[in-house]
Image 1 (cartoon, rainbow, N blue to C red):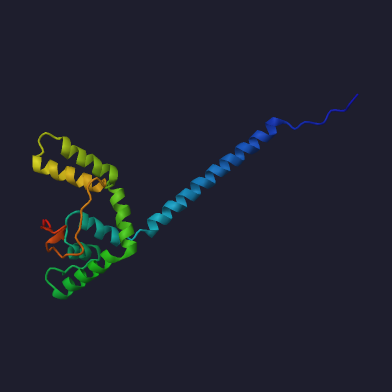
Image 2 (image 1 turned 30 degrees about the vertical axis):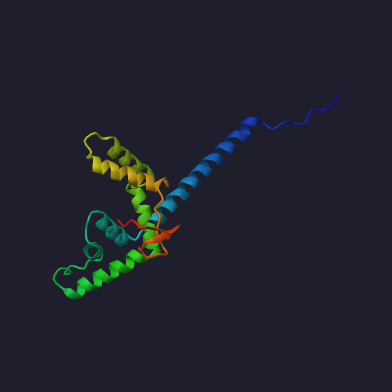
Length: 171
């Protein structure tokens, strides 16, 4: 009679698999927590305060002064100059501009939100016709339906075409 091969118990493998899955989940959670901590620690809170100040309508120098604790910016001309110059430099910083875009996304300013607002302007019966026309024009320009022609050769002077003189429209 042929001898049967010993079989492994399936129940013994399951607890080990469950333990491994639980450990894997715990490791993933720890890795995610470390990633979130790294994001929080990498945030330049002064940049955030500066950007939010501008988004709330503050002048560049005032938002910079608030973010960097320049308390006498309104009365001290030197602090005003420092705040204005540094705000200008910061706004040109590539890393800050990238952070600005992320912050805009976080605050809900994205393509979907803009499209929704444009649709609301266009379809709202209380919106004045001039605003509707402007919204439709802007939307069409953004979607590439309207292409602005720019005269790069004549400098705004009449362009002779087939012996006729045509005026270049100016806005």
